[in-house]
Length: 340
Image (cartoon, rainbow, N blue to C red; front, top):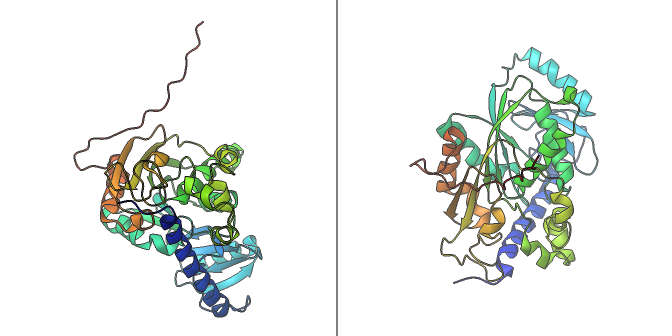
């Protein structure tokens, strides 16, 4: 039996209320910008990662705009400009003899209303079961727009010194940020492009054609407060057409894991066909995918789904989701040939 249209977005609103509560705690926990050596909460919700090296992070504050350097235990070491933080990190790197970055990494990106902590379990699974080195990227999903968050991801990628191969795993809106970042890097001068090969990309419940439920709530001031500018950007009747022009289809191997009931009906009456309580299965599809699979589950919990985790590692390793090795590719449209 399907649930009413408000169910999926109500779940997102409840998550956002939790986020706001954590923000209040964060404000009390970090009252002073000058607290060098003090413990932080690691940048949940209001900081964007701009540089990541073995879990050392340079982060940018989403409203003030200043930067800080935190260590793997989330202790603040310095603050100010990006250059100042990077210079301090280089000193620490030398004094502590930090090891070089691995030649191959997997960048993991969370979705709207979450923080990178939401992806910790999946990241750990990829590391232990897949034996990959993982970079868990965090950004303030409900405060800054998708374009700004993509710029932060570009900064992280461009600073992966020594890394030769990058793969991606993302949930929900995180997929759109990656597609935007890839587009942004295409416009960079060749001299500014990192010498990196992109290998594979696992899209978990991606809103590859926007999110129809976002249209239903795009006029709600309360919803806009909770979900921020991305709510309008993902709404097909609002900002999606503009946003979509800034996205690329990956030119390397990618696969899509969609959530749903598997019965052709899904969870919500408001969404045609099968759905994961927030997105229709059809919305996740993107031409050119090397493989596509349906996982039974609701949108918000898919990163914690055992099948999703197993399928993700299998695709990163082999380029397919099912143990049998069979695939369900989504063919790219044929390009019409001109007749000489």
